[in-house]
Image 1: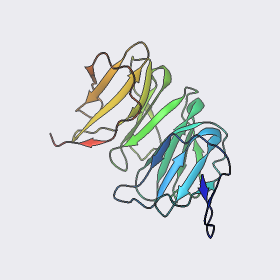
Image 2: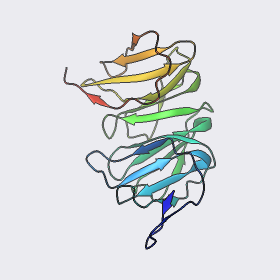
Image 3: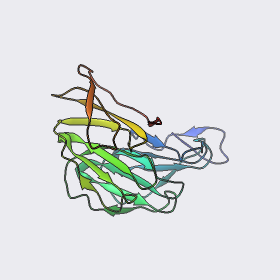
Length: 195
């Protein structure tokens, strides 16, 4: 639903599945939601009103993350990566080098982040998403992940043939399965822990 300014009711413009919403750290008023058909919605009042923003794609967007209040990355189907440098008002596509479906993206710092997806695709960036490096992960399917760095613990959920919660404490150099028999994990959030 989209609330229209000045109206005392909520008008339904269309039924769009929006599986992911993100707010910059420390801000509960400004946020971005992404979903089906390349949908991107932006709020500046904590979600009372949402404005649909052109994304330039019709692909399903599944993950979104603020690097800082101005820089936002969203990922989705067929290796789609979109980046905004103006707080989500304008978006441009970035090449991912794959046609696999990304499920999530998360940044531990404004420069260091991970994105994961179907068929074991895992990529990380050390330069705010300007370029991505493939990580040779052997698992089949992944759902939302927490970015990790030496001072962070990251956890990702997986489904499919290899099930479990995978964690890293060394910035993603190694990953350990912490729970062998999880059925499915859809959302895991960043957890900071000093080592």
